[in-house]
Image 1: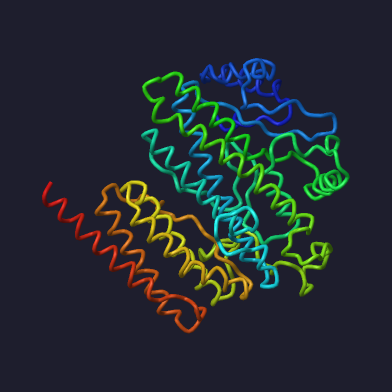
Image 2: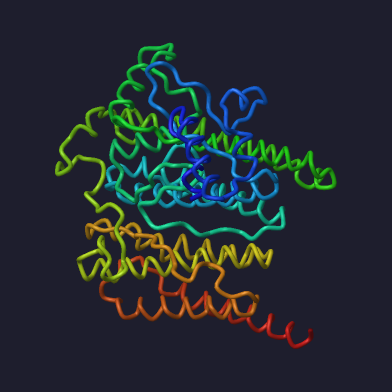
Length: 438
């Protein structure tokens, strides 16, 4: 039931008050934090960033981030885990969208070097944000979080339905909206005609209904709660104070660089469109349309509703899943072991087999679905057991790759499997000796 009070649409105070009264009548207690945040006026009096500003007359209602726990430490970890899910989901969406672009639009797709001028560069920055959020969780003594729900899903504190879909003007509109700073997309406040035209077209593309919140709103909540926690526990100040600046940087990268990039793609002014401003208006079947016609929210799990149908594409998509899972398992191991060696192996997987399959699958009318791993990314408690699990997963991928050898893209790097197994077995031997000595 708690999830029903996490989100308030528009004003919503009367509905929430009635809901709380109903729970109380049933003998269910609600934390005082809910009542402390029950009025927008109270929140604004103390400068609470959890509640966005009042709506302008013509603005659609937004969903607000509502505090759940009075204890700042608990609330901070809750928000950071949600932030990690959102960064992870955005990263995967941007990767899927980038690889859906046809070769003629490689300037928009990019090469994967972190930057704010192409989509793979923005995805790489989201990977960095995911890394930073997890490092802050570790600094707080909490576990890292690499879990992401399946698509479509609606994060609890950031109620915006995420979908894995090819790049279209509609998908770019959503990315632009969620990356923008709150209050910057009101056409009435735009000073210049090009900006007003952009905002009118954005509003038309998004259509009616509740608007998604902005990513920056969640980071406002994280910064606010971290400041509160630091003030409540002065002994932590020295170690955690630098994180306030890092979080502000993450927020600014989205609201400035990422937002500008998506504006240029939305309006077809990005240099990768080579001066053609009509491309999003073409029929999807037109050869000049920027992206392949890929399915939305595909899965490689057999029997699911959106299962990839083509047998060849399905096998390669499952292999792509295996490499995606290995990357995340390596990342989790790197966090827990505080080792850059595992992070290096994760990059090897990303830039090798994962990259090869991600570029090839759209030519078959599919894409890597990046399905969630059913075991999670920390299935084993001990370091030695984690490496054993990784070895099994690499063997699984290597075995499937050899079975699909005739269907793989020419640039698929078989040697990566051998390198991975050699490095992991070396790590295992070191950990085994350490266990014997202890």
